[in-house]
Length: 487
Image 1 (cartoon, rainbow, N blue to C red):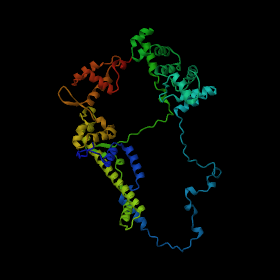
Image 2 (image 1 turned 90 degrees about the horizontal axis):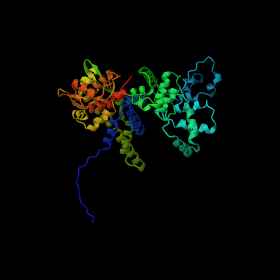
Image 3 (image 1 turned 90 degrees about the vertical axis):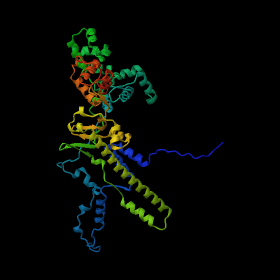
Image 4 (image 1 turned 180 degrees about the vertical axis):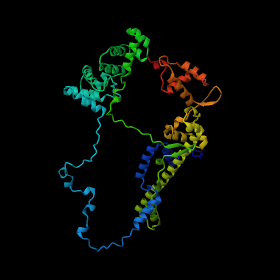
């Protein structure tokens, strides 16, 4: 049985303008500039630059005096400079011919670099080997299977099956392994290895034979697991060598490159430049915050579009085409106004948020001592500026600030609080900094285990459990004591 009834309820929904603002806030400077260009390309009612300056330039152009020019006045041929009327795209063909230039003419063309990729360089090296068509197809497939680090991380069986199904190349594991040995002869040494152990062995085989190299080869070949865990006492007993001999062999291994592909100089790696969104300077002992000018573009709504809309509105008779034009123009004008308002709100949000962070961490920004960073969480800043935590998070996670001590990611200033032996709240960043300093100064021949590190920090006034030390050490990307040991 169907029934009809009324139900009242309150729901929260984000308007399109709010969604647009949230998306703009989380964009860093370079991405924001790209978004700005896209919006201006999509919306002809949105214009850049200063509105008053553009209007003055237009008025000046419209009011230019052309009364002195007489249409009936004759112009003599010799008064015309033909070069002034020729644009670059109207240059006669004969002027572009090489034989019209002297050998002494300076060539101003800038050469364009044509970098060779890592895989193309390997294929070029294959030309130095004598291979038949079938072997070359397999070799090129193997080169294509090498990742950016220089490894082939697939089994021979998988490679054989893949060649058969995708390339129509039918072969067997024995043939593939034979061709793989040819790949192993390519530069850089170690390329085409299937694991780290094989990579190190390939590089050692390319070295000039010596007592240290031979011992290093035997260690990697026979006792790789013990070496990776730095069980040096077991290695000395296994091979019957002195500590000095083992130290030289380990030194040979440490000079090897575990990622041979990463050392290729011709690799086209995209270098990402960090553009700071804010800048903090110290002026007369006070902090001064500025927003990157690229985050504050000059935008305005097109006057032409506004005049067009007004013209259509005052017309008495409107055709269907005119109504569609009015709808289109109104939609573009509204979108332009919304976008400009969102840009202004974005600027205000960024400045207010960063200003609160700057004042909260005033002591750090004045002298750059990381131990002076106060415990700070998103909620602290949220309450200061009266904004939602999610908004603060969007600002902190993707924005950088230029300080006298380097360019920093804003979220690095946030940390939890812990109690010291005086009952005062201290930042976990301060504890990590002290822990890092202790580890840098420790004797690498006898690294400190986590329980001893906990005792040292306790002596400094930070009562921390051993498991917390382990967590901080992992966050600092520092291995356990055994793996920090050096001979």
